[in-house]
Image 1 (spheres, rainbow, N blue to C red):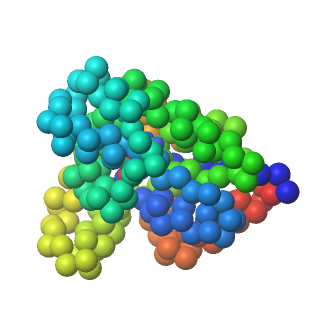
Image 2: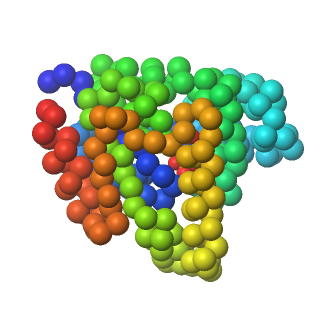
Length: 209
Ligand code: C5P
């Protein structure tokens, strides 16, 4: 069979990561969580005390990022997500991370990537593009429950505010704003279980194979 390239995009906390991992396993595709790249740059900038809103200072960090040395565990948190969305607004940062992502997608095995601009910028020729959506309230509720289950005392209203801020920043930036590609399938997960989301995504993908 032809190598399959799948692009999963959508806003923060829509369930992209969970879906992407399940799909990558199901279709035996290498998986790249592209948010980790921006998180790593944001973390590095904060650790060095640099100004995250200064494009000149941020671009070299992205260019010199050692992608083999990304520690997912240290980057998963909300703070890293916030740092990521600030550095991700700079065109130079995005450009510096493009080649790595495209090379990943170009493997002979095919690949699955998730992020914000995979279907629009990184892999415009992906075989299947899925844009995962859910209302800000649903996403904030899920994230709050997830954190509470891990023993983290967070308040729904705080998380909702964070989700809205991140949506705002990701959707309104000048470069590669969060938006569905014209040929993306919209998958609204608001009323679906994790299993239901997976099944619906498989249906969309299987229709393309
Ligand atoms: O998906 P995740 O929450 O890890 O992404 C963190 C931030 O990185 C996003 O809010 C977004 O600003 C940025 N990002 C991006 N493009 C991607 C992946 C992530 O701009 N392809």
